[in-house]
Length: 369
Image 1 (cartoon, rainbow, N blue to C red):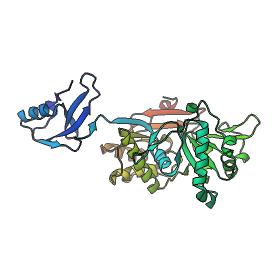
Image 2: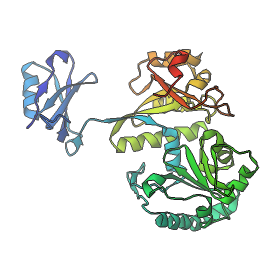
Image 3: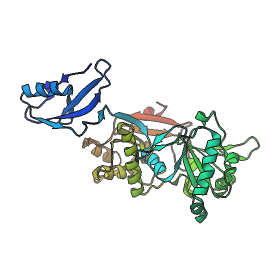
Image 4: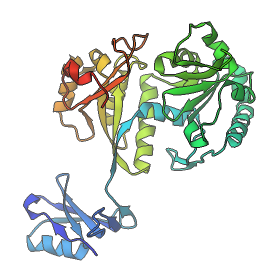
């Protein structure tokens, strides 16, 4: 069954209508799942259906028609919208670290990064990477074997902590980043390099039952000493984040997303306004492959700068431009115990999302949502 749906009331008869012809249009409408073309005007879809029927109907209304057949051998379908990403981090991982997750993933060039589905296979892969990168790892103590995507839940709560990683190597630091982005596992060499053994006990610095550090480290504040020594290899320079944003949006587009949200732009680990500036410049330079919605990190609002404005005024100025490729809407609040990174006094983490680019009332940020 095909759908022939033409919204004549949306059509400006003085402007041309572009009809995109495809091998197949997947409408996601169960009553009419397939079509042959999509017609657009002024950024709006005005018709979907059988090509001959749509064209003839437009001609009867004396519309100017432009046929675009660039997708004639392709499938068209509605784009997905990814509303919770940390794209600069993901792009940096894809560029500078090794993927060791459970499921297959797409790289920026469209190739498949194969999943690793057992602990034995993971350890074998880590050993292989050590030998592959031995010359680099031996060149400096700041050279780490950085890996990402590990999810112990998909490996039956596998233990890949310090003692297991030490079986891979104790000569070079290893950082095994979890898929959540909130936890890393490191080996003994990394613990010593970052002097974690000299730190006081902390709930985010995990230990074995015998009191030894297990190498499991949680949350950005506690992971920061490792990051500072080279773990995860995050390049927070403007060019580094421009490149990471380009990679992340390219991968999102390969996976069918046309819009993504940076869930916490200018989050505390990034310097100054560099994250927001990377998105702004990326859009201006044509280096973004999807629409991007920047969700400001509430605690760093004062860092924002745009066209001579700062803070909330900068965000509102950007929002009022109604740029179809770059926007800023909701706000992310993250409250936790005082630390070097997060200084808002709350007893437990809390996340809040509001719909306006203005300072939300305190009670809007009081609980998770």
